Length: 35
Length: 464
Image 1 (cartoon, rainbow over the protein chains, first blue to last red):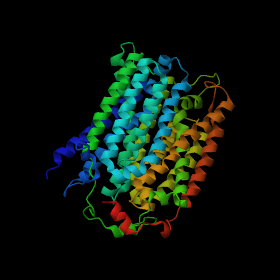
Image 2: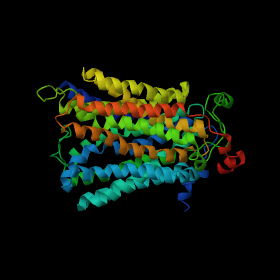
Image 3: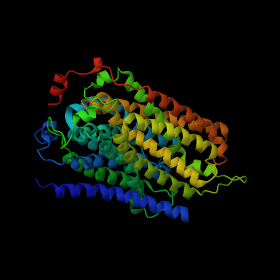
Image 4: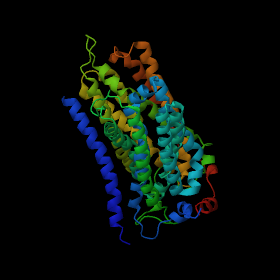
């Protein structure tokens, strides 16, 4: 059973959600600390 | 009932060769959604303005949700174990999404009690069931690395706020052109709040459904390739026997661990609840003005969220290597030192303050994420989800005790906006005492006595 596509899609969903959150938070923090 | 039978445990058994690495994303899909509960401050001011209510009256919505989390996890834990993760995650998604929709109705009609009922009570039940639903399944799939598995899932609860905070701000600015997402004091209108709640409810339901249909339980007798049960058994405090949830709460080990979790969460919440004003107060000059701007304090809170999330994964994974009891000795023991340093030298530089707060918050997150694996070590995997649910009442209790301790001391020291680092010392030294109690409780934890163990026939029958 080839599960690679399911694995990629599953972890991609997690990476996109978490990545969005972390990057947005870091952008906010950098803006705030450097303004 | 035919369609819903797909949710039954017997229809979720994984076929041979199923990759266990598909399970953590399924669990994360749920935890990333319910972690929104930590991002309610984004729209709190807008709700206060919309309902023309006090901060406390709106803040109660979050408190109800957290209390319902603890209660539903405690009461529903056995049901979750009996019905399997897919049905539990589906029920959690229904409650969580309905909570948002009823909350939206309350905002739209100007009825605050409907927000209490919707987001607080109904959504809170979704929080509790959703939080515990994947835990025992993950432990069964990862008997060799339970800390890593539960750390991944519970990291999602911390990460949920990181996703929900910017997403909520951007959605509010989409629905209300007068709302500025870059200004923390900006206020959105009631229509935008309704739009936000409806969008989050539908969106979270969709993401959680991904988890519902991805989750699988391992077949009876399945073990990962190369897994050596004898090696696990050889580790201190790790049992291969099983204890039921009903028996677990009769053991001293359960209550010692309850105290450990309570102390760790109480200490962490003390910082988390007060983070934004605290960093400003620590660096207030003789002229009464803080060198840390309001906006910078908000950025500091965001950074703490990242350490909270990282601690959940990093420390829980580390516990697989060094053991559960030693890692809690680190959380509580090093936490004592960090709190002491925060009280004595935290005001000397912002770098020292941020570093110490980050360490403390990472231990706070680590304590949450490691506890399911600690429970598995002590009580076995038979009803670990239900036992975990009962233990989460410590979280509800700490949610009340932590802010009470900090705010109680600060109220005596002066008014908000005039406090300095000195005002925080009594509260911080109290937290040192709280952590010491937790440290001693952890040291007292021993293996569970044989008389509490289930017979092997009982656990095999129940797993069918």
